[in-house]
Image (cartoon, rainbow, N blue to C red; front, side, top):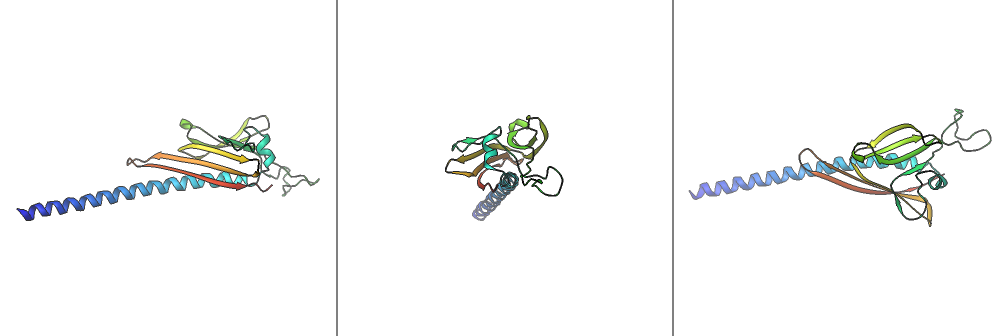
Length: 177
């Protein structure tokens, strides 16, 4: 009888350890998926932002002035070959710029990171979902470093197995043009 009780306790402990290991595995897997989604979204924003000019961030709507405050959206332009001559500089030596590019939250439940291309009147020419399950997006610049912009983004999703994945990441971008 004593052996049976000890056996039941050992088997129960084995199952408890296995359950805890499986739960931990699922949680780590959910966190990894969240990190990958967030990294992909931030990489897209950083690639565009590096190419812009700080004056565009202050002058286009929604603006991100160098005031130290966090702004929920950003609009800017990037160099683009507008006259299709194979160069982003026109014949007079002036840089050619794209239509306005805007990053903001919107879409389904206001939880999608959207990249929109707008004309000068603010009409949407194209729109794409960069990432889903985004709960916070912020752009910050300071007067002491106006060519640097900090981008902060939070991803949060409830996985089918019940695990919640929440990741916040912040990147500093140096504007090159």
